[in-house]
Image (cartoon, rainbow, N blue to C red; front, side, top):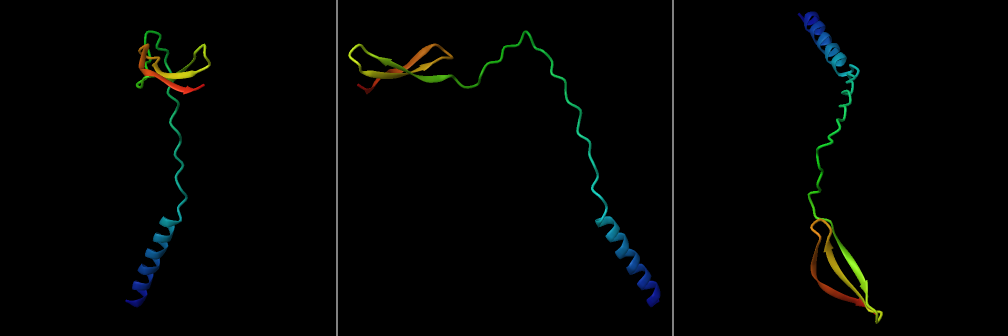
Length: 83
């Protein structure tokens, strides 16, 4: 009985060791998806393109104002910067 228990314990330990020490499986990468040309599709950004526009007056004073290039509209008033 002791010999039978020792054989089962040894077999279980060897099976567990073999399971743990198995090499990692190699997974191949998926093939690249070909890009299609969408000639009739327009891509539009989700956010407006807003930037500062600077203006220097004839007297040397510099002003800035926000401009929305997406809608073509001014935002706010002219702000004095320096001069």
